[in-house]
Length: 270
Length: 348
Image (tube, rainbow over all chains, first blue to last red; front, side, top):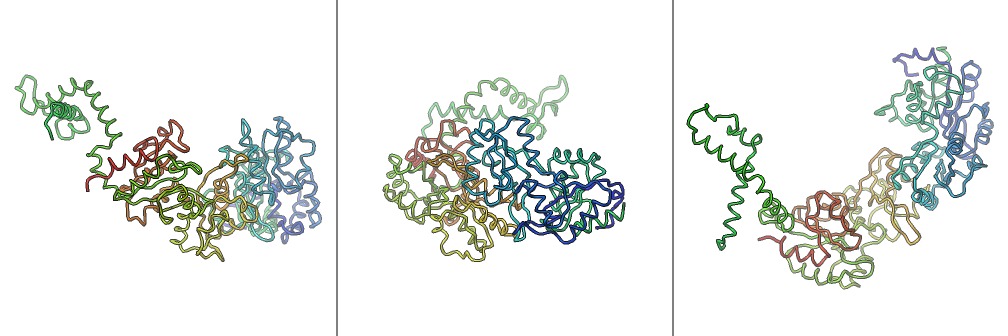
């Protein structure tokens, strides 16, 4: 743990929110692989008495399938502790009587079972990976520009994420592309939206200053959490790049090598 | 010059105007001729200076309203014709840049009278270049179309946004990853493309897939410059609207936290690059085009004069959408040439 600056706040931590991709595991071929030390770290946290929740902008799978994938890697996590954008979005769609045109990864579509998608009056984009073809983007663009009131929802706004074979473009890039094409501003559901974090805090029944977020995305995980009054810790795994430690606006409360190191520091200070 | 009564009246009006515009705070006070300064005590005989100041103020008060009329007329004349005194601050015209689609031709039909107008322009001591913002057609295709329409030109007189991109790549001595349409690749022959360290984005629907964009993304993250042919949001195809290169360039800028170098119109760089091998500064050049913002606005922003023609994509009122307004708005290319030949060549 980067010592020097006051780590007093560690003592008042009662809850931990963990980002998943890049902290617990790296995604890629065959579903991905666990990051060294993360499985044990999670177990230690669960046994410590701290309230633990998982936050992900992962939208290449339904939550159930996703958690199953993690169980196979050795993580002991229950679906009810995992928060992802898709359920939050579906709630919004129902509230506002919206019918979406989807540009998402195929495996996410089952999350939208029961949602009326005829005659769409909004566009939803998620981390669609190979589904981000010119043809699909053009279709989404045409729906959007054809609406009287163009409404674009983006499941997260990340710039890129790490897979086992390198960095890949995330949903935020295509959100910006459609925003520019139609001259609109997207509504972001998921990190770093304050509403999204608040949902998690409500479930934990804790105040922001009692919770620390551990993530690999400086702006969306750490910055987003700090924006809500939580502490934010940056891990040097996943999409982390050394330039993150010289970011002009976001300064993490601590920089650690990986989740195992973060949990060590946390539990020694409790 | 015949000393007509009209000239006499004009001179008198200009002289009176000159007196009336002497500004109290900005000028008179600064040279010690202000209202509060040196008038002398109450009851004293007014000196010469005081009498002069009184004259200035009287002229100003009395002639303020009547002088509005000639001043308005004077401004109109200047904007329309470009008076000799204004021309004196510009150097003689050396080059004329001409837009293609919408200015010289509309699809496969030439603008009436354009071929003869071009021939007349070539009689004048000016260099001519044809400029366009294509991303899909190479120079040869454009050249062949213009020849078919009987325009007198050489292929090397054509300068496109693709040419601009190529010149930039050569200047920076980089090896490009070319995300451009196959039909445009011809304009990049001769450039080394293996082990790329630069990214060029044009309009290339076939290349805008996830893998290609990821490849471009990783290169830029490693420091490769991102060069955009232009940043159009979308364009019209037979089957409806379609995304242009702009959205993809914007997306990559966001992903890498960098800014693209845009080489096409209306960027200043485009016009400067077009003039570079003509050995000509922007103040010595004029642009003729149908797109108020991209042709005229862009050219004037680079220091050139801009002539807007009312053909092609022109819509009534376009001339009011740019600031400053076009140096001239006229019906079509032949009228633009007339204006150049009559008013812009100046005395050598």
